[in-house]
Length: 163
View 1 (tube, rainbow, N blue to C red):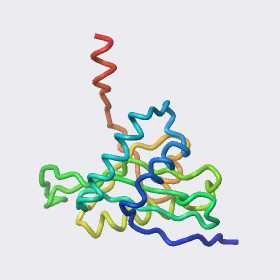
View 2 (cartoon, rainbow, N blue to C red; view 1 turned 60 degrees about the vertical axis):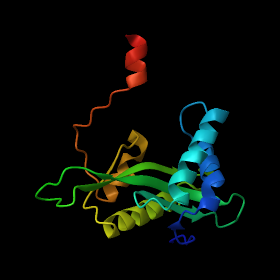
View 3 (cartoon, rainbow, N blue to C red; view 1 turned 60 degrees about the horizontal axis):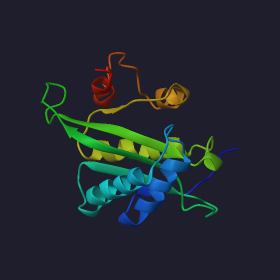
């Protein structure tokens, strides 16, 4: 039996506080400080309030209204160098997908990611990138993502501290 849920929608400035709460409740895997909450909200507000065309934020409202948002996908369009297969040099990076624990395993993450992909395509991005936790990789592979296997990450703060 297929579960029905609300349709995804573009996040609005009024969603900023709830997006911050969703990210905290959804499990960031790191301690959250008041400074982080303020910075997170201010950064989203700045990009969303000014209707930054490089910001894509999709939300799914909670069907039972116990919380306002059930799931969200947020990312950004990056301008890189043009290539033969990407004449405009655009790539969307899906920075965050989060679903409230009470709404997991209902297809909500799949719904917001598909909506994010559609918006990225409408804005001219031929590719979407992301970094997936191992437990979420299966979902992204079902949606057509493939492992590039060559992403290297440098934590500048950690490198300097060790240094």
